[in-house]
Image 1 (tube, rainbow, N blue to C red):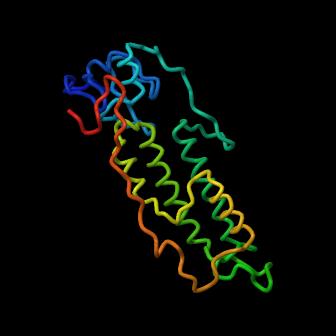
Image 2: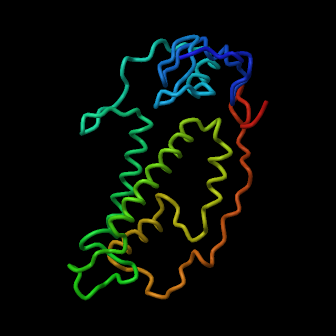
Image 3: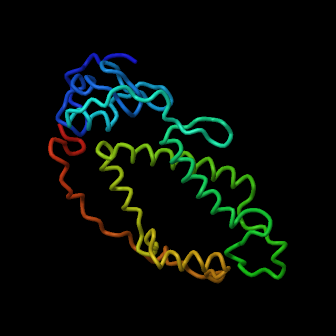
Length: 221
């Protein structure tokens, strides 16, 4: 880990210089005072971790990071908490897609085949592999952005513009009912025009939440 040459430059989200932030330990990556933060893959970060900046803003030096805060998986490999979150989310999505992949899976275009044992869904093995790669990559990027909401607030917020009115909200009774229908093979009949072709994106106002005292808005000086 190396020191910043431009140590007087302000960090993202806080009215602090890099030199000030580097005066304390980082509980996220384990960087010592005077050392730059690193990513989970060992690359040097341009901006210190959000937790380190927040600790410095609050006047706290949490001290050295514990020797290992990684979580050992069932196969013996160790993962950071960020990686664990990515695995849990991406594998949960993958397992849900098995509803449409493999022997006995469902095809929404033919939800009630004459012989259910012959059903194979509509996702092939090769398509499932490709989907899994895209899912893991996308989830990993999203979790990484959520790790530092102050820095990525604008990008995270504008992701919400992809919400359409036909989408049932997460955790809602409408979503639970729709999911039960899918599991029971109750789907739109072939040739039905889905709601998504007639819906409009939600109109979201720009974020108005004020940053906490001492923090700057994303993109600020």
